Image 1 (cartoon, rainbow, N blue to C red):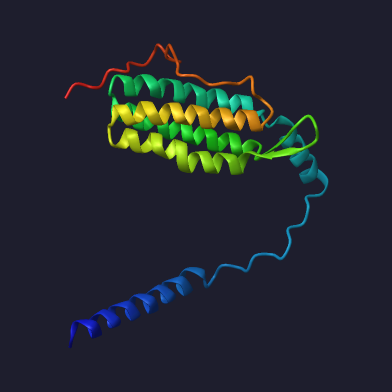
Image 2: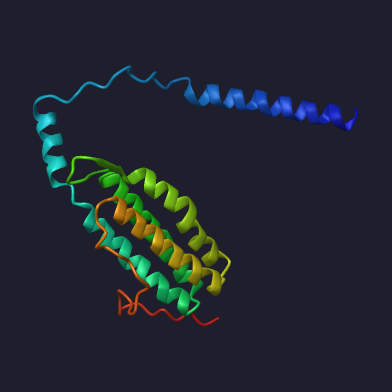
Length: 184
């Protein structure tokens, strides 16, 4: 058998195997309902109550700011393990912010697609910070961190909050955490 025939056989086997696994995994899964019915009675009251107690985005942004601020100091001390943790937590806090309110209502009645803005910022500016941390490249970190602050500010401006202007922090958000790397 030549190499091309073996390759074709492997590809076909993978496709057929994948189809078999897909069938096996989904054979007992009910088809999704065409429409979900709106809750009624007590369930509707519960939904209304839960919507009324969802925190504003400022709560989750405090969490994001805490991690983002500490990230600066972890990278400054070249504690890349802590920096990896903090960038992950900051991004997760931002995802929480977007989940709370993916569309923001402006005073003039217009809306801002916060989810769309965040997706663009996350895939560009925040990803650049993540890469600098992963590469343990302090110079790239400083540059990408500052660019990410600019991207954050552009979101704040788009959201009608130009007075929320993030800057490079001058002191850590936490004095409880050591930013020094662990001894090797």
